Length: 276
Ligand SMILES: C[S@@+](CC[C@H](N)C(=O)[O-])C[C@H]1O[C@@H](n2cnc3c(N)ncnc32)[C@H](O)[C@@H]1O
Ligand SMILES: Nc1nc2[nH]cc(C(=O)O)c2c(=O)[nH]1
Ligand code: SF4
Ligand SMILES: [Mg+2]
Image (cartoon, rainbow, N blue to C red; front, side, top):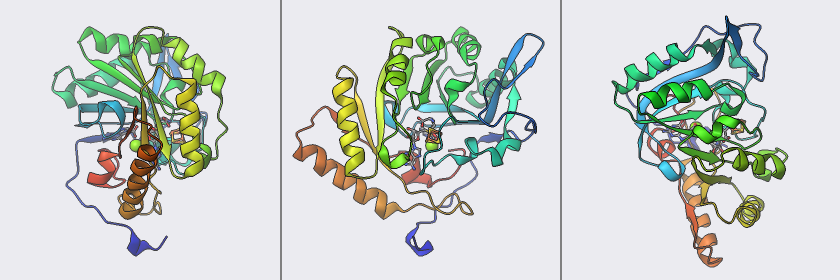
């Protein structure tokens, strides 16, 4: 796409902490990050906020983001490559629960708000003890994951947002693993499906997921074509809005009245800027 087609968005630098002392020898996928004594460390790409949750059921809610490094997927249009691609490994830092927690407390000034655990795939990391620590201080936790890896600690979350990947991602969809994630959550968190839609095949995929998980609310999110990496704030805003309008028409024509169509609010406000 021509560079002129992208809208350049500029803003003051937000509160953000990019960890930059990565472990050179860390495994690409970010399996278990590292161990110090008996504590499993968590591989962190960035911790930032408070900002607003820009996607899905918690849209608009003040949130601090804890983004882990490493993903078992490589979606063709991933907008967070800095937490996926091993080329960014040097930015990922193994951190203890205490260190993460003091950063979160300082960013939130001790106010017990919503923490969104995202990535990469945060389900790869040992996040149970972090959730336990945060709950002691009355914070709430949401997790964003593609639903490829289930963990027992999902049951400790307040919100589980499952984002199975449609055909345009180039990833293989695994229904059993997605079911395992719902099962692992037991009766703990509120669960929602959030599906990125670029085209008709993605829309059909979302409908089939909705059929499999009738009891769960579903959010349809227009895809954002990621721009050239040399300028991360550029977006194809016309493309996003056209896709959004098409989706609204599509859902209305289908009388799919329990699906919710929402854009990525933070992308509309700040483009593909990191740390917002
Ligand atoms: C960056 S991912 C990280 C969490 C997890 N790996 C996942 O995919 O759910 C967070 C959310 O951003 C969505 N996302 C990633 N790239 C996108 C894009 N180009 N357009 C719209 N949504 C995108 C994902 O589908 C997911 O719902
Ligand atoms: N504001 C804001 N909302 C978000 N919702 C999901 C995000 C993510 O990258 O996981 C995200 C993000 O990076 N920023
Ligand atoms: S699963 Fe999520 S983080 Fe991983 S590549 Fe896909 S969109 Fe990116
Ligand atoms: Mg994002």
